[in-house]
Image (tube, rainbow, N blue to C red; front, side, top):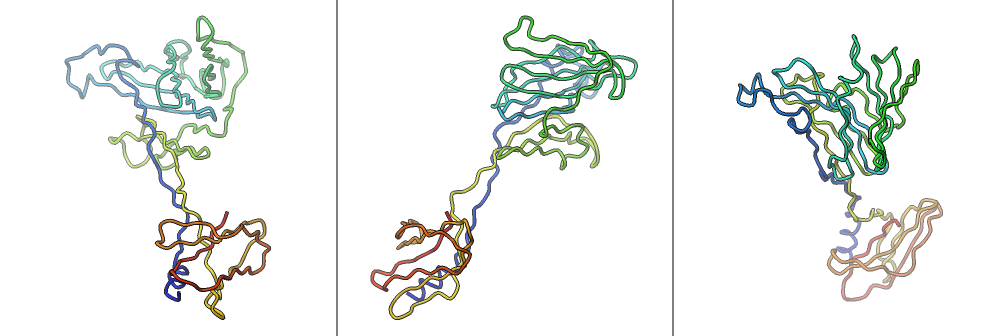
Length: 280
């Protein structure tokens, strides 16, 4: 039993976290920009440049993107909104906002709402002045996209999960509960700045390993195995036993922590068993 007890004390397992890629969304050039004006040209001059400039996630799992891009053989840029469902599939793509609203200083886009039936963004000629235009996507309306112009008004982001104008790849993760969004940086860009060409969604999963409590002053006393551990108020503890360190079964009822040292004992007997204290 002493060897079993020493092994028990050496167990310091804690819950582990793993990150699983759920989906990656990368805009398709022909869908976003239309047909390539030079389909057989040199890829260096006739290819596309498409970048994700902003994204907004919502508790419902829907994601609203602001995307801009162009065919390299064309000077004019295209700027659109794209709504993704929780699986990363395109639900809706707006018309070219640049063609609709562009002024002498370009346009400024703020993402406000993303949901299964609607998406809202504000578009103005700059971030500081001009008319505020609400671009509203309504799944159940006809047409689905409408514009509401409010002169002299400016709209701000409507969610703390908004990542607006990220400047570095390692600063672009938006964390919401167990979901992680990350923008993928253009590999041809430099180490600082640069554009983002894709959005990835990850799920943070926690293992089901319980947190093991390290006993103190434990051992065999008068043919009894005694476990003592420092408890915390509001924490429930459970004694478990095993014969192979793989399958564990509970012994007795859980014990509530009091902030003091708690103890548990059981007569030493065969076959040999391992014991541990876990938090509930």
